[in-house]
Image (cartoon, rainbow, N blue to C red):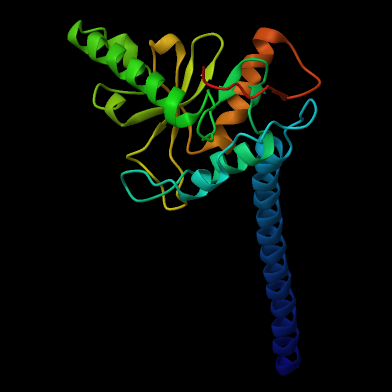
Length: 224
């Protein structure tokens, strides 16, 4: 009798253990599927899911430079930026934003030309602000040591800038993305464009209302 009771106890505990094990496995799989869905949704919504109004303007983009250019740290353009350029080409995003691609010689609005000039202007403004102790210019998320590492890669028609912190590349090769509103503030938007784009899309929608497309292709302009 005692042996039979022990056997029943062992069977019962074995069943409970198996149920606990199955429950843990299912919980783990659910969490994994949820995480993958979240990541997949972010990528799809932010870049591959961009809705274009027509065919993207890409004929003047320097795709060789897009893949071959190297920053001071030896790394190339962040993968999220390269994916955006390939998907959207040259255009106006969310009704406001111009993301500058590398362009072929003779064309305007390229990252090397326009981005470099806007970066120079941004850093000069910050130097003046630091000299005047205008600390609000680097609030709420930055400090005065940061502007020297920030590089403009996008500009809005409201006078705001998106910038990379090119000294803080992460293991995935991405740069943190910052926003400077009217060159008078510093907001950290995320670790890459996948995180930053939904935020600027939402702010643009608040200003302009919802739109049936995300990117309006623009005509490539030649330098005069």
